[in-house]
Image (tube, rainbow, N blue to C red; front, side):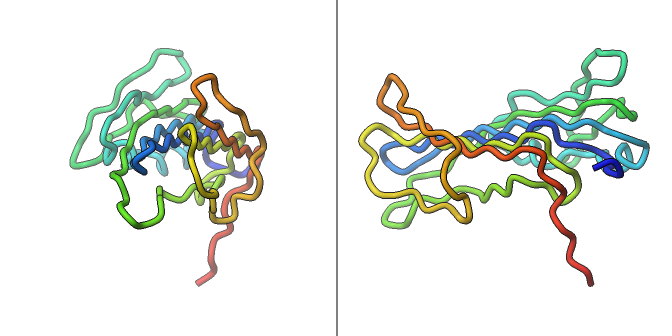
Length: 170
């Protein structure tokens, strides 16, 4: 979208389910700031601030160097943002064994409310010998299914060039 203040270039979530029903997820996002309005909209990052483990968090201005933002009051204060700069983060989350309940993780939309998404990917890793079916909310069929050397199954759902989510009119 030409009018977008920022563009999400990579929106990836990899979820690995364990045999006991617990899960680990790794989230990766790379965003380009397109204009000054994008700088104002993306001043802080709360998603990585609430994660259990932050693997990477940086801003990359046009000079190519990367800067690690400080955490201030449960958010990261993003520095050195300018049109053409990039913002990147990777973090991990964990979900406990669900007991008799169904396995659940955070929903993945393949889109963003504030920016178009160039590449959005959800990868689900099922343990070897996993029983039952995957019932994902409006996921459709996987783009690709692969059996890994250790017997796990990787289900890959890929969407490209997704527009911003439609805004509700009040």
